[in-house]
Length: 333
Image (cartoon, rainbow, N blue to C red; front, side, top):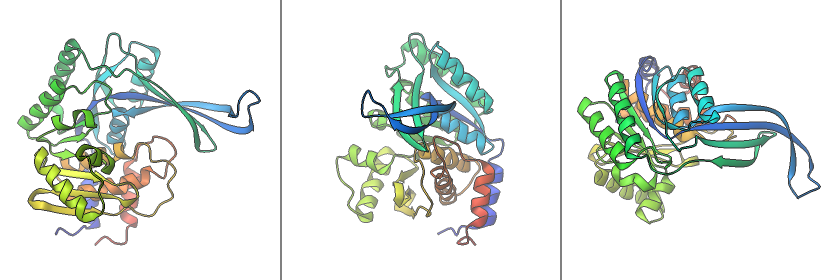
């Protein structure tokens, strides 16, 4: 089994710089309303939040793209937004983070997906969502695939980020995976159950344990049961790698030849788990594109997830943070 070394891991992070990655899927706008609570409303038993500031961040596939950019990669966005103020804001937010938005197309009749979180004293009080979940039309599918065809020659990896908002239809999924395989670049998928069976023959499939249990209609009792279930799932999906995120238990990597590696989470103070999965797939895919061994890529993804959950709200993990974390890990050779 390959031994992890600090030198190799730092070399991998360095090779991530400048790697173009096509990030296709459901782009969202995350709105944060920050404030304080000092009293309960006299109108209803709810807190009164006195607003201090508002902030916009990229969400969904946008957060994946933001993590690619923060690691020094070059994200190429592919998705749909609405012809609305929120869509304009999303483009501005993405562009401000160095993300190419030429493939973020306006869908007629669609609204931009917005998640508005009201946060007081670092605690989320309420979340309000506005979204379109209808499948992309045939015209929108054709426009998405035309944009992908233009972007792919520059890409060294592809991420399909599925939040079940209608962008990744079976036609788009099948075509993008086929093009990625033809180009022999890593194709990584963060799936939702509705389209799960469409994601065959990919390089990396990254569900969480709850999604695996719902897909297979079972409860995973222990590590042995996990190994049997996920090994069979990887083979059935004909995925090269299956990475299962397991919350406080870390993650487990399943590869060819029935190989499995459990990666425990590192002890940290957890403030917010939102966006951690986006960080995992962004870092893992970049590392694979930078020719890291899968075990090295999974280590880096797990380390980045640990940094992510120590932040409040959906935030990317930056290259310097991951470098510092690797340098501090005394378990490395």
